[in-house]
Image (cartoon, rainbow, N blue to C red; front, side):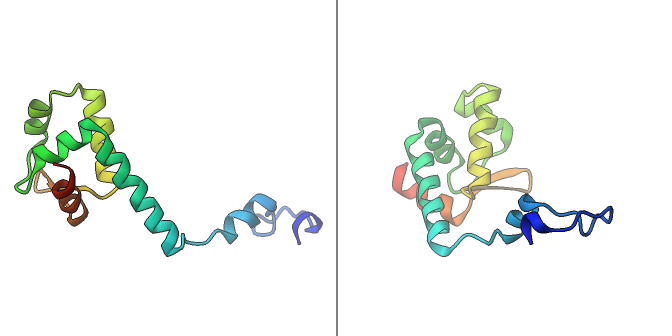
Length: 112
């Protein structure tokens, strides 16, 4: 219908081209997911602060306080890098400790 759609005061019918486009968005393909995973692994492996955080967490995990002290990063860079590692699935936070995920362990083994 696109531009020819009748305008109505009923919100269900008041949809524009942007809404049509957003509704047609599909889940990423497997290839796109693999590409995103490789991008994240590269970003984590070439950044010295992220490698240091992965190395400090190690296989036993660390509390936030321990990580901040041992990494010697200021609050901004600590949060920035930890957010990346958590969002991309290299770390998880459970029982008040940061721990490596399976992906984090494989990255840890290859870069640390």
